[in-house]
Length: 104
Image: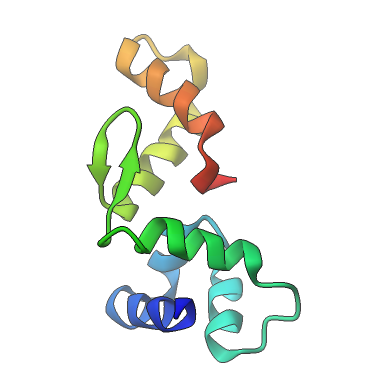
């Protein structure tokens, strides 16, 4: 079940790291784990399934199979650098990250 996967990841990595990997706030992670999240959890559930449901790897269309942490780092970096990047691979990552269903 998705909540068990979330709790296992939080236990192993901590709520702050899991929140970063999922692209949600730490408060959201804490409340969901405690069963006190006041809103619908479908969005969180789908992110957990997409990010942690593939043997702990995220499949990036540009880089292939990478860790959820690497995915989050690249997504944040792509958002900061944007289209201004001079490296063609970085521009490709930026364009791909904008459309990524995992990070919406």
